[in-house]
Length: 367
Image 1 (cartoon, one colour):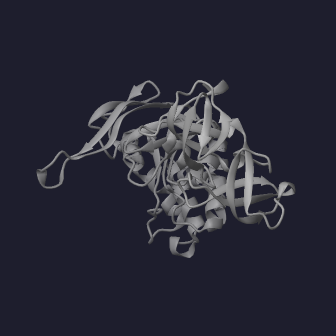
Image 2 (tube, rainbow, N blue to C red):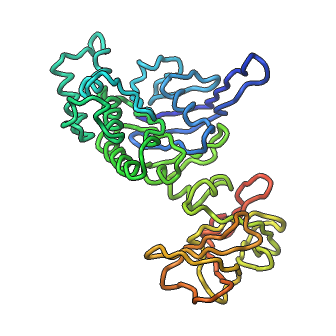
Image 3 (cartoon, helix red, strand yellow):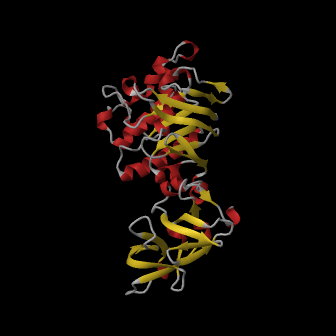
């Protein structure tokens, strides 16, 4: 089932009735394709959870409409929308067994949808197998690890065969290894069920690895929507470029003269079509090619061995951060004893932005 959001806005009233209130989501329009896993990605306070709560019906939009397929569900109550919700804190009933936690939503079904105990057991057994917790059905939540509890929460959300699965930072309470394992499980489960899924996270690595599409948000507004690799390779603005990527993109104060990009005193790249003047240049760590005769010169700080690759950590007065991080092949390692290093740049890994607005200034084939 596809989900369409049209001009969605949510404004919270001011505390004490004074002031203008807070706009958590502003004029948000996009479409979630049927059967895809879409990540809402952005920093804390950008409106991700508010967006999720409006989709499931826990919050009513101030303006705009929400469609599930062709159905307008904007005014429909949460329990009638056919959504499954997975929360950050699991929200399991501690006095109930895993089995009873899973079937709890089924006990509230009425009329033609009401199920017998045998039907509930069959449904619970099916989803328990899907999330691989069949052997845990008789345990209580306190007897489970964090990852197991999260699987129970997912099973409970899936047991009603929802039209839409919503996940609000479901991995935040897990340690690093469990986060990796559980996100792989979530991806497997989503593919096997084919249910349209919205996954809220502030972790860009998590969003990039798990989703079919990502929505990058800031201050309640949509900044970019697309496939993860496309958004990484072709950011719409400086915020998106800086938010995606580990290590982060290297950002430099620069200028353009006669179609040439200049960082400090170094003319580093042709940028045809970009107007002359001050700009911000972003260079991905993998966009550097170590070359003693290269045009971009930096002061060498250290070399970090990363196995197949190495990271050259250097300094440049024009860089926004204290150091410049460059990822190169290990067989291109600089000689010991060098005080400076020089690089050529891969044009596809260099992005130029307007200093005031952060908007992308395109050049070459990508213009």
